[in-house]
Image (tube, rainbow, N blue to C red; front, top):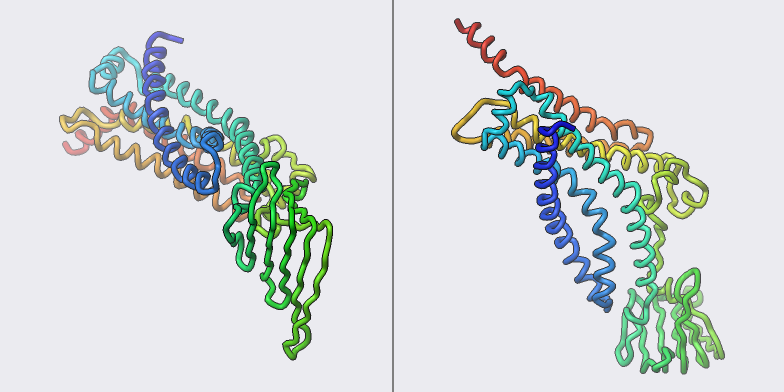
Length: 379
């Protein structure tokens, strides 16, 4: 690589590291604060909070990197122009097309980083996060099983525990399930154990009694039945609504599995094969925005001549160009979400953004001819 390319690329990478660090920190802290409050309110430790925030970091980085690339090229180009380095390069015979080569290399480098994240680290982190959320949701002892006070884990359910032994046994348990007014049941037991199963947490009641009050007929008569038991299993996962009925998310799986969805994936997510392929193509299209964002920030600032007021107009146009590309990306994602067969639209924003970059570079390479033509026309 020529020295001039290494110089420009080094400038862009240095600024990119700074902007990426700042933007990731701001974005991550903003998300971590809400997550911190939710987990601490559920009685989780600081280590669990740290683990969850670390698992959200790959997703945050994948979202922020294209914006950091745009900010680095826009600021770097402005600094090269302000220090007359860009003018010296152009006076030496380097055209905007030639100057854009290291910027394109920089954008491709950022795109590769985004690709590694969206195809590898983000699905792995999301899958791990989903597993940890399921484990914490099943940890009802920390959330609901608190001794000495009445708990109302869901509407119509009342729970009371006198004490919890050091070995985890629940002493003198009372549960009233009145979710169905016509069929109410109260459970009491001397001891109880929380057992984790494949289908969720189960409460095993020992030496207790179940009193069922059922309304019979249209006259409002009520029948009370009492059943004594030495051991009884109660599905507290269903009672506390801890089980996620929606299943797993498509974003928890690798891109290769989404492109070739099997029966296990479809059963776990409840999605159709077209939905899985649409998610895979959305991941493939996401890294393509990074080179476009980098070139927009560079090419827009090359348009226009010197002004003592600076290049704020070009900066505004560059931001508007990036907003347009992001708007098209969101619109294509929404359209493909409604109709998975429209997944080719996911690649359209990157193509239109590339066309915009080519147009901006073409205009930057012909400014004098345009001004000369307009002068000649006026004469």
